[in-house]
Image 1: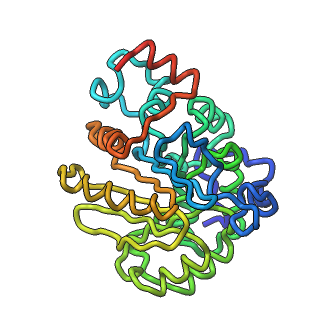
Image 2 (image 1 turned 30 degrees about the vertical axis):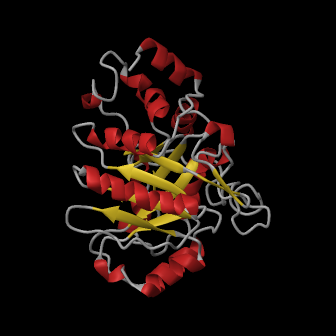
Length: 312
């Protein structure tokens, strides 16, 4: 196997391959260890009724789904006549974050990134799933060359202030290895907001949480029909993946209660519902924002155009 496998369809490499992306070390906008660091680029209070000023921390609730390009979400989420190329800007008029799984299999092109940025308003956030070379092929080992290359492809998202976090979803058969995790965290730039989804229960231990805390990385609290990650705080933000097909009203109420606890403590929350053949996940996310009192500002001209052309 080559040292640095190149995904299919990704023959060209970013110009700054082998270098840390500009967001990484010296820019106080993105370096969490800099004394002038911000948690995330700020959102004006008037843009968000959920913004709580706690000292100088602006806490926000972001809710969305894993992906958006699903025609079968019509007509319950997307208007029946909406063209697929307009899905993202309409999605961004209803929800304020999305988790991108496309980056797990391909190094995304800058032109694609720029389209995403242009279709979404300033307050919108993208969760980016780390490439499979990092998590599933190399399994966190020997990633020193590939990590800068991967981060360089998503640097425009961070530079635009639209990165929620990079999700490192580990394979289900990767058992706990504190040394492996420690070495990987040492390679990962501390300026990168990172969340780790552990899918083997041997990781669910205080030693794991301590390593994440020492690197300001979050536990991805993933809830499925068979397993739920302990809801442990290890970073200045919270990252949730709600993967059950359906949730009762009581389950959604408890979900909101926990999320609001994070916001009250000054932590931003990124919550992603499962994408399915039906639009339940998107509808749950919209309900969560409504229940929390979140009024989205469709600041993107394209989003405003979609809402006028295809009223809900």
